[in-house]
Image 1 (tube, helix red, strand yellow):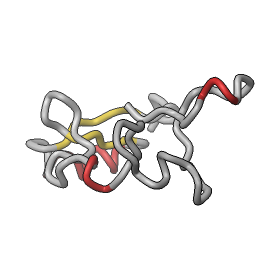
Image 2 (cartoon, helix red, strand yellow):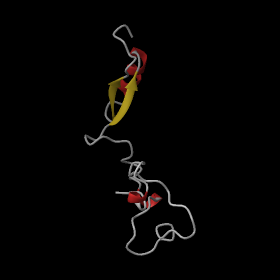
Image 3 (cartoon, helix red, strand yellow):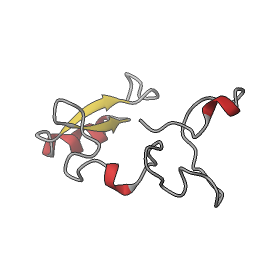
Length: 89
């Protein structure tokens, strides 16, 4: 949704967003029909933040003790085993 201002000018850099600086830039001055700038209004709802599409939040589990904590809040969180969580833990 947010692309770089004049991406064809800097071909060696990927076309992702970076903040336009400078007093003469059209995007910086928020002229009509220019690309959109990221702002706080585009943020997600605070209740739905960090939720997956199923409605749960992710909880990273490293050992069994962390899994026991999750049993209390199992209506709103789901467990994801960490990459360093072994079968011994």
